[in-house]
Length: 447
Image (cartoon, rainbow, N blue to C red; front, side, top):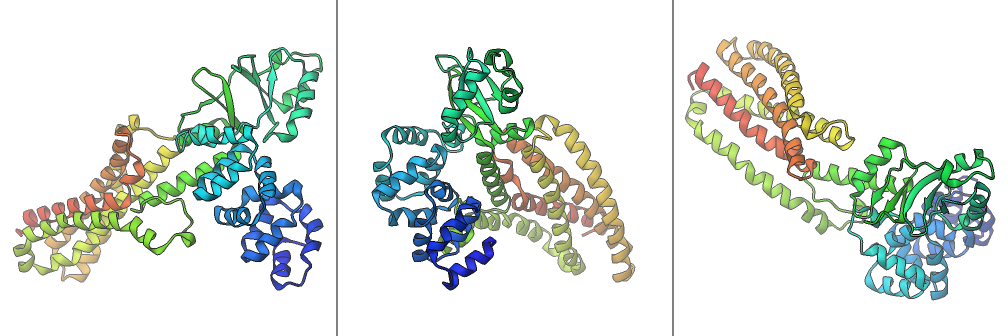
């Protein structure tokens, strides 16, 4: 029985909820969490209570914060303790960060003292840092241990660890000296020393490193896990690839929101209130609206000329839209290139030179088509055709240049390049395109 069929039976009430237990034991925990999300409050609680204890904490970790709060409020203190003590520390920290104070107080009261201390320690790390997303559930080995002893350690401690595919070699002072993969251990001879076969060329992070930079390291080196050390190079935790996937989604969402003039929000769209959505948009809309005053002032300065030759007004929207679109294309490519590490601010000269040439080709193509269109549709007015065509060519070249430079400049100034995206670039290019247009009209037509 697949997930959809099982969900439909639960909703219709045609299956005894107690008969679900053996069916759920063989299902993926992420799918079980999705089924729970579709149930009403009462059935959600019943559904969670009949989950096998061996998978309940894993299912809880996959639930969103609203579901988790409903479940926690319905459980007894003993049941809360059982769930929280089985959660990996990083999942427990993520859960607590999303809960209101009264829920946090009750949860921490029922967590084992050692784990409570760890959770409180993790909560002190800066947001978006390596320390805030790492876990302490890893396997550490001694440098002088044999492969046979290493396997004994993994068998005894591995079941409670988040991953055993990579083990980390430390000295007595917890100084990180190497790492060893499960593959290396399985292929090694039982009597070999860990120190002789471990990998000492490590990629690691410090607790205060930014999570976005760590995600880039995971991509660059194709990592499944990365050790995290403190200032003295002592191993304090690891970051696993599932946490990095969450980071990538979070950072990408934030960049998309900034690129479209939205204040970033951590809450899902359907669970965000109307007032908050409006508040996240109003400020940027206000800034962009007021910045449009510049284009209004430019048009006002040429009001007399436009009155004498009204046909010029018809081409202003086309010119401004084309410039804004051209600039947005360049900025999007540059922001993406920086995000995945393909380009950096030191490449600015090469990038600008390339975008100028791209802009020239695009400008010539669009300008030629516009020349023919205007010539045929506006009484073969040659001077008007030349004015609009030259304006389109120059606008696209400048728009491409501005679009590629602003994100690079923002990066140099330690500002998120996503801020210098479509809305801001469009506003700047609109003003420049009008200035170019009216200057050409004044020189060619005598505006």
